[in-house]
Every structure is written in C-alpha cells, then in structure tokens.
Amino acid sequence: MRKTLAVGRKELHQIARDRRSLMVLLFVPAFFLLLYGYALNFDLQDIQLAVHDNDRSNASRELVNAFVRSGYFQLTADVSSRREYETLIDRGDVRAVLVIPPGLQRDLLTGHRVPVQVIINGDNSNTATTVMGYVLGVLQTVSAQYQARASVRGSARPITVESRVWYNPQLRSTLFLIPGLIAYIGMISAVVSTSLSVVREKERGTMEQVRMAPLATGSFIIGKTLPYFVISLATSVAIVVASMGLFGLPMNGSWILLILALSLYLAGALGLGLMISTIADSQQVAFQLAVLASFLPTMMLSGFVFPIASMPAPIQAVTFVVPARYFIVALRSILLKGADLTSFWTQLVALAVYAALMLTLASTRLSRQWT
Image (cartoon, rainbow, N blue to C red; front, side):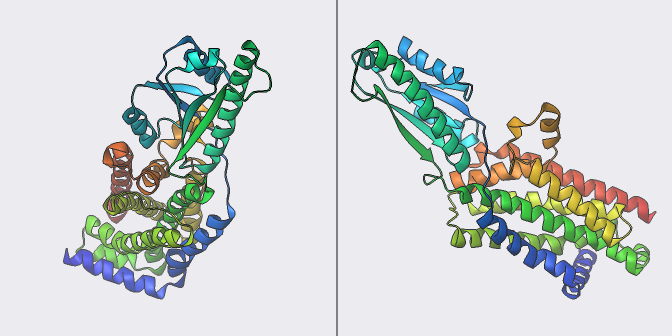
C-alpha cells in the first residue's frame, strides 16, 4: 500500500507541474459545460406506449389501435394499475402512458366530451414535445370520426386530452442535455488525462526506472489512476452542483447512488485511458487515440445525441460496449426521476464489468511490457 501511495504522490506532483493535464482536468470540463449546456438542443423520436384501459370496450380498443396505426407509437405494455406504469416509466421502458377512463364508449356514443389522460416521460423534453404533438393528432382524428358518426355540429370535440409530463413538466431541454454532458465531459477528461500519464513516463525515460523498482504492476496501475480518479470524481460532482445552480438541475435521487454511478463510470474511463497509454509511444498519438476512443462513441453511440432505437441493428449492437450508454440512463434515473437502485441496477452492473475489463486489460498489457 505504501508503494501505491508513493506512486500516487509522485503523480500528483507531476500533474501540478504539467499545465496540459491541469487544463484537461479543470478548465476543459467547465468550458464544455457552459458551452453545450447553453447552446445545444437535440431532437429524439422513440415512442413506446403503455395503455391503462379502464373501459375495456370496443371504443377503447379502437382508440388504442388508432395510436398503433398512426405509425408513431408502439404498444409496449397493457397495464392494470398506476403502480405498473410508474415502474415502466421509471425504468425507461415506455415514453407515454394512455389512461382511458371508464365509460368511454357510452360517452362517445352519446356525444359527450371524454377526457383521456396521457402521461409523458419528460426526462427528454424534445421527445416529450414530439410525443404530445402526435398524441393530439391521433386524438383529434379519432374525435372527428366519432363526431361525424354522431352528426354533432358546432360542438366541442368528443375526446379531449389531459397530458401530464413527468420529471420535466416545463419540457426544458437543459434537463435532458446536462446528464449527457456530464457523461461526455467525464469520459473525455478522464481518458485523455490518464492516456498521457504512462506515455509521459516513456518519453522522459523514467519508465525504465519504474521497471527496476520493487513495484508490482497492480500497485503501479492503482497509484497512477488514483489521483486522476479523485480529481475526476470531484470535478464531476462539482459539475452536478454547478448545473443545479446554473441550470436548475434537480437532484431527486440519492447522492450515494450518484457517487457510485460516477465512480464506476470514471473507473472504466480511466482504465480505457491507461489501455491507450500502453499502446501509444508518444503523447501526441495518445491524445489522438484518446479523443477518438472517447469523443466519438460518447457523442454518437450513447443515446446522448441520436436515439439508439433509430440506429441500424449493427450499430445498435456496437452501442452495447459504450459505457456512456448505461451511465446516462443511470444518471437520468437518479437526478430526474429519483428512482431507486432496482430501476437501473443493470446499468451499474454493465459499468462495473466494463471498468473491471479495461483495468485488467491495461494491467495485463503493462505487465507484458515490463517483462
């Protein structure tokens, strides 16, 4: 343990003297947060529908079929209680819930107005806005059909919609963007900083001294990553706190779960950076590989910018090895939904597996280079 801490202290002194590392770890995250937090606005289309049918009539089935036939909705679940669709929304299995009141068919046939409730998951404000537009379009079409059948003239539509947007009632795009930005900033800063650490030893010729020292590979890896882990974790938490103050980001979940998710995610990112540092022979190559391995997958294949469901099947398969895909889901569940561990434990397991794999591969490659 003493040897590991000695490596860690040495790395902290190295970071303090290296302005490039300090820039990456401290100023770049703040710059990205302010730039993208205020400037970006993305669209997403992925509408999975659950139905809570309290009428169980031909009219209610026709209404559900109208949603499915529209081409915008996919019927994912038929629930019988509020608790069921709350769980589905918390897990991210559905985007919208159609709640059909009892007496729908009777009121439609008599020309009375029928309020139909639609509950929309608002963790993605752009999606929620799109879903609401599609819902209104479908209900207006069905309402016009019943209005024509009943020969009602000059009266209000028989079907009216009462929409509810959960987790983001104001449909603020910032609340959708910030969790993705935290994943994006954390990945880039952690991978770039650690990818340069081992390569720096190679360029300065100090790696040979490290090889001759009575130091195990595991101790060297832990000592190298520990300072970056602490700094990256503190920076990520500071970004969350800053987002709460600057953008009104809510914290509806547990800080302990947030720290756990951040720790697993950053451990995997640091492992990837160390893996890159064992491959590259110069800091320039290491930097380019780090940006390529962290920037593109996190931005393009995590669901942050583009919906995974709309990607071709081969690309969707690739996204399973992108840790940001799991981290963003866990982060939104904690910050926006206030969900407990049962709603996103699979994401944390995936992050833990990825971190263990990356650190093991980096340690194995470094051991082979020492021998």
